[in-house]
Length: 148
Image 1 (cartoon, helix red, strand yellow):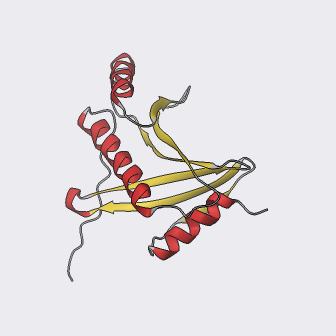
Image 2: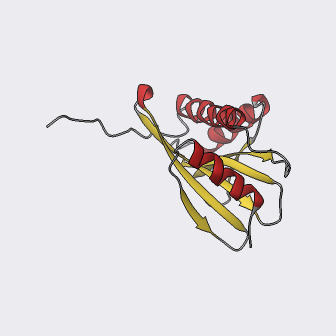
């Protein structure tokens, strides 16, 4: 069965020469797109979930919480959620992982706009770096390139 949203994302990624991994599940399809932010010397894997028979996709990331005080983390996440313009932060029960996600609508009659995708992606990076600044998560360092 074809998934209109995944087909459109796939076409957009191929046009932009972006690499990604695909994982099929019962509830939908997950695309994992690894990014390396060179000037920040960090890397982040973005997840895109397209649920079956939906005309939306969910873009976001999940990271391990490093801050010890769970009350402090909950308070900071509530404050951050209140200030977010798009998406939401959550912590799954019985885990030490914070998840950021936003839902994006896709029109069946139009191609995906790469500029809009990049804006959503940049917002994910913004939230990621905010979480790092609060000390809730640890920045994942990219590997330094060493000339041999």
